[in-house]
Amino acid sequence: MIESILDNNLITFLILLVSVGALVGLFIGLSVFLGPKRTSKVKDSPFECGWIVTTDAWRPFPIKYYLVAILFIIFDVEVAFLYPWAVSFGNLGMAGFISMMVFLAILFVGLYYAIKKRVLDWR
Amino acid sequence: MTAFSSFLFNYLNGVTANVYEPVSVATRAAEVWAHEPWLAIGWLALGMAVMLGFLVVIGMGLIYGERKIAGHFQCRLGPMRVGWHGLLQVIADTLKLLVKEDVVPAKADKVLHVLAPVLAIMATLLALAIVPATPWFQLIDVNIGVIYVTAVGSIGVLGVLIGGWSSNNKWSLLGAMRAGAQIISYEVSATLALLIIVLFAGSLQLSTIVESQADGWWIWRSHLAGIVAFFTFLIASTAELNRTPFDLPEGESELTAGFHTEYSGMRFAFFFLAEFINMFVASAIAATLFLGGWMPFQIAGLDGFNAVMQAIPPGVWFAVKTGGLIFLLMWFRWTFPRLRIDQLMGLEWKFLLPVGFVNLLFAAVLILMGWYFAPIPA
Image: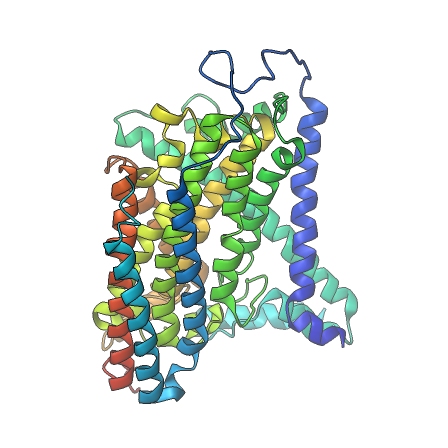
């Protein structure tokens, strides 16, 4: 049983995760331990080119970033969907090719629509 | 100890005969687990030690290289004072950063502020584990290697976003939002470019993809499709790395330092290190998928030339290809001016993405018709 787990690289991955985490934690711990700790009100305020900070930075942000995120989700899920198709493309032949091209054509219409709607114009 | 000696024998034989059987460290450990559990643990421990050592060497080497190359591009010498030609400069810098104060701003979200660089560096290090550096050293070799790289690599953007948001600083927030928008946009093109090679090789496993290039690298064998995919990947990964033609998230002249404005000491160093390791991972993946990984350069018909090329160990081939790509990325930095944000988004969504799709169509037609250069029969 353990061989199959090792063969799946899972254990190695977990060991690596733990050892990398330990290394990173060690260095951060060391720097906290070795470094000085001197606080003051001005020093702990956010950097604002020397001006006195008046407002919080956590406030509503332009919607265009949100639109890019939505587009990203559409296209990235679609690319993730293409991966199994790409691996088995040799066996699928013409049928696989045509069905995927229909799918891509529909997506392409979507991209064209987004461009025409000036979603990506970054005004 | 029989496994060690037989491994050594096989390796030395492999160097002369160029017959390699790619075995990841995980598989090697699994093979000997049943009868020699301590040897398996030894393999794993050795793998981890080499991995972490590799990490430090790459990180420091790349930072030194970047400073030296940047210096020479500008007719300067770069670091010269600490050690011979400044070789110890990076170690001195690391020590300095280690004893610097670790500032967490009073208004910041403290937990996320501490967590962000850890997340950024962990993601890059886990991506590093799958890079097939040589046939006999690849830490883990999963059968969904390409997906693993893109999935683990894209956790890094979370580190950037969390770091910028949790600082509660306007520059940080702006930098993080730009970085997020830019990285996720170019992620689509990068994965599309990798998809072309998956299509040709018919596998997601990195060692299998390297083996499929024994008769020729995919960049040559796939007519134009591989070359277009290679350049798309190069541009997209430069953007994902926030390197200079696309360094809006950290544009010093407008955003102080972007998302890591509020970071100091070791946690700043981790953001920095993550960026350099990412550069190595991107170059290594490009070298593995497009330029044949550790496969030597061969020209059909020139037997003498091929024999000389085969005598060079695979690790050297991998290092040369990856190093060349890293140098190219550093060269970009001193050649191209920074893009504007609308140009950046336009380049991805209106140029690279359509080109990537057309290229995919082209590659699919090539494979369907069998028009790519097939292995030459011996």
